[in-house]
Image 1 (cartoon, rainbow, N blue to C red):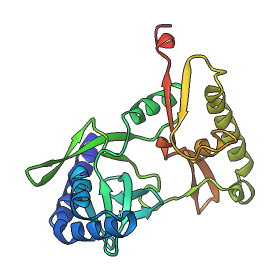
Image 2 (image 1 turned 60 degrees about the vertical axis):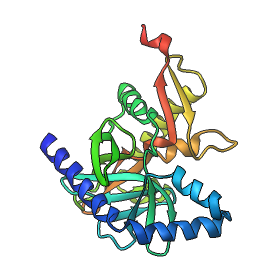
Image 3 (image 1 turned 90 degrees about the vertical axis):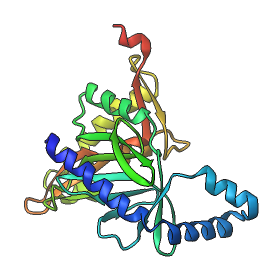
Length: 250
């Protein structure tokens, strides 16, 4: 699998380097967007653009774009993997992506979930660097996440967990119970009932607590042939999970 992962990294490099060559027209669209949406102009605009100097661009019709969310974009990079990164803005012809959008805590969250007994799909936090105009993908950074393709090359449908899955899938009740159990385990950490761990919410926090953030971590992987589903972890940066330092000494 390591060879396939290395191929996936090189594919991602190729995609981003191809788009980097289109930087000039894309950069002008980005400047126009900032002027219109934020009201920046003159030196303030130049300083804002310079501050976000590692901005890279992807054509909206790029064939590698698989899924577009409100704050994240998923690219098909082949070899059994997809690449995920944060989406900053959308201009008429480009997706504007920013370097280093993932927190180092994501790596710790992945380790903690595995320690808690969750089946965590293969995740790699990687770094995107601009080296003299060439984009290079390196390990142990946080500009992109490369993860296993949960569709397994189109064999499965992967959807946000929906209540209708519990009603229409043959093992819907089993999935409902699995989600209930998972939410309970993670909610107990958030509420301080599990003294070994701590949870903070990155996104989807509400006045009712972390329920929505926790639910958004999971997807339903659906086999259309058998009409059965599997609860899978996929969107892991909604929360930060880690073992407390004192617990690490136990």
